[in-house]
Length: 557
Image (cartoon, helix red, strand yellow):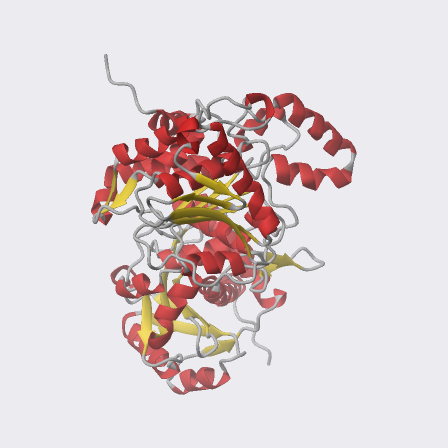
């Protein structure tokens, strides 16, 4: 008989096959794991089942302290085994753990706080780290005590742990290894001098600022393989650190970004699901039928249907839907289906429209080189160029968690000399492109760029101002959406543009025209704005040529 799969690996297979009902982000998390098993060694990561099992086995020493399972051994659900299997099993080439941050977002009643307490206990007591310092951390210490209190009760309920772990108020400790596990709040007298091996951040959506997250991240620098474990329900504040990490994880899971140090697991209904349909509720509740009870959720759903003010709470707390949020514009699954063949060799000599979105002097500038198809329903070909000040790239990588340095090495971004954008460098680069492409016209936003526009005109290019408003941007925005949906945009597979496309939020005017909104988009969208300017100018030119070809030019004598 064939050897049976480990519970965690079986969970992956059951999710991917549809045997376990799961939302899109869980499916992507499982696919990421499976893909990495197949090809991760090419990036220097491997999975160590023995180390993963060590963490899973530790939970056999833990007992529930409250509710219907009080006193019983903590039995991990398959989704929890999958998380442990990932966090403690994946290793780098040097043998140290791959993941340094984990973001786990699940609704209430899925046992997340108890699970987080168990992970904290493992890192403090059984992770083999001398002098381990582990903290449950929150904006206020009283909030941190909730998760830490569960850990204390687990220790008291286990004869083995109780015999080896000292317990005083707000402090679990092991004298022999000089390890400690404590609650910590930003309201404490000081958060300086920490040497963090593990941090458990529960209900991250409730953090009013990013102080705690930043302190924990900076305090792990002296550790070999630290882990910050964030667990939360969905929130509603798009300016929060929780939304930032939620959005970052989605980009990793869908492939817009690659970060081998960041683990993500988000359980939620899908965007097109009918939230009133009981058939979709299990997608958001991985502990469905265990701690997440169907009758309890049904009762709350009934209330939410009748009382409009209860709907947001139900959606957020039980179906893990971020409320009061803007909706991303482009369907990234459709984006993935677009062709990726564009190259300078393919486009050489063809008529090209350029969109130029010039940034402030310390930010990224984007130029889009767009070639229309010869026939009306053909493929549009696109080449993108990006520019950043060389001296600022490392700081931007550390601050934004965006791999600008890797994109420079891969040739997607050009690093201009100095610590401000060199506009002359960009002009020279456009001139080089003009040697290969037949540049018909350059569209640009005059804000920040009037001098450069004049200089490009002096260089012999036809330059047209495109101010950023619905009048100029609405039509190309609709057209780009249609091109992506019909897979008629060959974007060349550029990861920078894909990342920017995944960031775009649009705003509508009173006539239902829409355009990208930089102020509401989660991150940079300059490449998309440049593409829309190029597309806008191409549409106007093609339409005018079409009129002339069918009606002729009227001569007035």
